[in-house]
Image 1: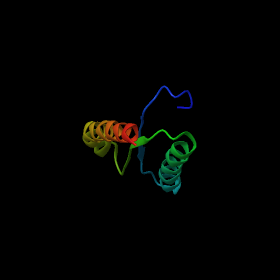
Image 2: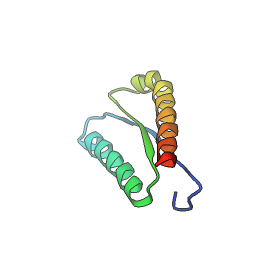
Image 3: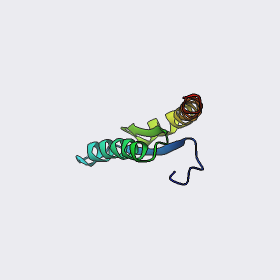
Image 4: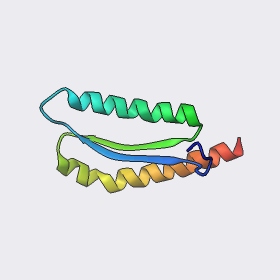
Amino acid sequence: ALSEKYDALIALGAVVRGDTYHFEVVSNQSARGIMDVQLNTGVPIANAILTVDREEQGHARMSEKGRDAARAAIEMANLLKRL
């Protein structure tokens, strides 16, 4: 991102709930990390990290979430170009 080659990025991933508190920590810190990178680089990042209770939920939602994130990334990049 610091190379200025990218107008926007997409963070993809999935966090599946387990039996420990780890799910909340990973979910919160991934969102925080995305925000930090955006603030430090000025490059918008569409968050497509799924947080689900079961893997099946992730499979069912992944294509829609990815598509939505791609649209959001394009919109953010276009908006920044107009500013």
